[in-house]
Image (cartoon, rainbow, N blue to C red; front, top):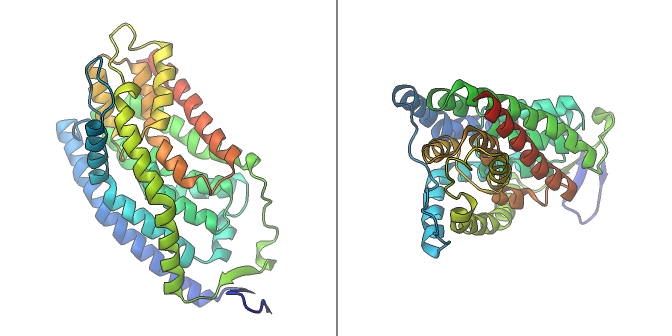
Length: 354
C-alpha cells in the first residue's frame, strides 16, 4: 500500500464487507427520504389527477399586458417555489453529500465510470425512482462527479430525474392528453440518454482502464467529518446561486411568459421563444402540467405548449449554475443548446399532431 506523509489521503482497495454495509445504509436513507418526499405524496396526487383531471393551479401567473417585473412578483414566486421544493431540495443535498461520503468509489466507477452508452444508460435508469426537479437532483449529480463518474452517466442521472419522471407522465396522461404524454416520453428519452451520451465527447477526461487493477484514492478521515465537510461545501456552493437565480427569474417571468393572442399563440416564432424561456425558467416537479393548462386556456397553442412540456422541467438557469463547476463548460453549453433544439422539435411535432 502506498501512503503520502502528511496527507489525509491514502491509496488502497476498499474493504468489500464494509462497502456493502455503507451501500445498504445509503439505499435505506434514500428510500426512506424518497418515500416521504416523493413516492407517497405522488401516489395521492395521481389519484387526484385521475379523478379531477388536475393537479393544482399554475405556479406562473398569467399577467396582463404591460405588467413589469417587480420585487413583489419576484418575492411571491420565490416563496411559492421554495414552499413546494424545500423538502426535496434538502433531500437532494443530503443524498448528494452521502454519495460522496458513503458510496464506494470502486463500485461507482465500475458502473458509471466509462464514457460509453452502458454507463450513460445506467445513470439514466437510476434517475427514474428519484423523480426530482433539476435543481433538487443537481446536488446528487455534483456528488457523482466528485466521485469521478463519467460526464454522460452523471448528466443522464441529472436530466433523467425531471424528464422521464414516471409520476409526471401519469399525471400528464390524465390531466393533459396522451399526445402530450407520448411527446414528453419520446423527447425525454432522447435528451436523457442520447444527449448525455454525446456530451461525453466534450469531456477531456479519459476512461478508467481495467478498473479492478486501478488503486482508488480513499479519504481516510472519519465518516462524520467527511460528511459534514461535504454538507458545508455543498451549501456554500449551491444555496446562494440557487436562491438568487430563482428570485431573478421570478421577477422576469412577466416578460418570459407574455400573454399571446390566438393568432401568435401557435406560431413557429412562439415555439422558439418558449423553448428558450422554458430552458431558463425554474419550476417544481410536475409544475409544467398546470402551467400548460393555464397558458392554453389563455390562448397558447399546442406547439409552444409542447416546447414548454420538455424545456420547463429539463434544466433551468439555477440548476445550470449549481452544476457549472462539475462539468466542462462545453458540456454545459451543449446541454443547454440541446434542450432548446429538442424543445423546438417537440413543439413543431406538437403543432403537427395536435
